[in-house]
Length: 169
Image (cartoon, rainbow, N blue to C red):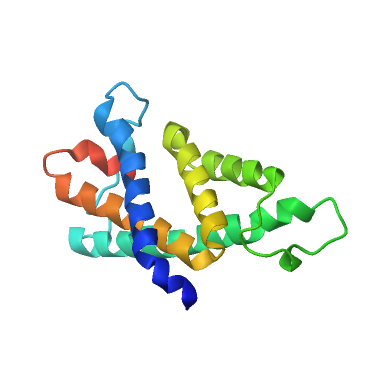
């Protein structure tokens, strides 16, 4: 569609989100994070390659699509109309209102692990702002998918030297 012309910018936003998500934990050892017991185990399904493939599909394809469909398509518009006699589907995608902006950023933040809140909060803001800019859900799904795929790739490539990074998957 017409939104596809902006795909390079969507990819750039996704890469920026990945950097935003990882950088604080790479730069500041003192930030809270779970211990070794919370690390993802790539051998869960019997073989690391099979487990990583399934995890990549969920992490970079299913999660961004479902999360953005719920948060920035449904919830963003529903929060605008829940106390009025109106249908959220009548509101255009990407319509700004403070209540829905703050509500979805809060939702996005608290639905992540508490140790991730420091990066989930600004990520929720960036994703909302990108939706307001692009006014279509596709670019936000793409940015989110690129972010998750980049985080996944970074972790898998660095895991031999940094097994602590498995906490991000």
